[in-house]
Length: 338
Image (tube, rainbow, N blue to C red):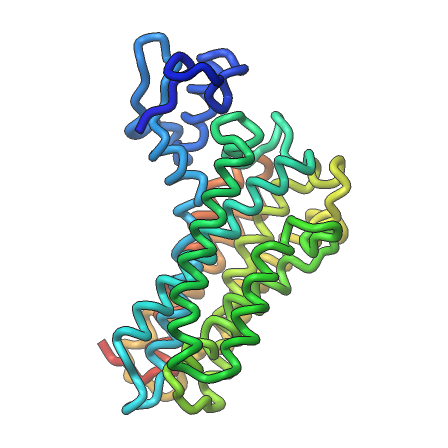
């Protein structure tokens, strides 16, 4: 499917933008830190873009490892005799769908509220740049939430009744982050919510889906795994603090300032690694722990020396760090020795 201003009597989303601006917006949407454009197709006049590529980048694929890691950790912690492959797959599907939904919701609500402006420092937003309309984003949001609800209902029916409560909280979390009259992202609660949903809710919810007993190790692991995921939002808000302040969006970075925000970022990466110190594991299994500690130090240094656009690559690096840390916790608490 291709979007073209001349294919219909109605202008395509973004048709009011000059062709080179629309192609430039998609280029920014698709580029990595290297600035190289991958896979964009357009007509000779540059007026046509591939809609699949727009959608694939609007759901922010670089954030998806952050959703997968805690859920995988939850599967490892399931007590023997309670594990089901169907349940495990549906847990991952539900988590990915919710993560894509919150990314679409942020694009939609921040665009409608005027938080996203043409001078924003992060990846191009589809609504603000005119690549997608509000109606298209609502449709995409509805579809991803539909997948999350469908997979979640299966988990609720065959899992613990408390999943009803967790499912309702997850839906409110998706829509309330940047939507509604009082988005909680505007009240410096975003990082706390990310820790909650990508820590205890993801891990303990996975155990409830399998009807598995919940022990102290699972509770501790769920608390640690969400902290590096919250660091992704911290660096995102550090980058956007000036634009957020102008738009009246009082994120934690706006409230505490860049210096304290950078210290918070370093703490969210370093503290959980220190507390996951492998006291009783064979010698070689110390190596991943040392590598994680070095990675936390390196990312903290990058956050301390970068600002503005230069922080964009740090989002993907931090998301990958969160996934690797979740895998390490699976070794630490799940008893997996590779």
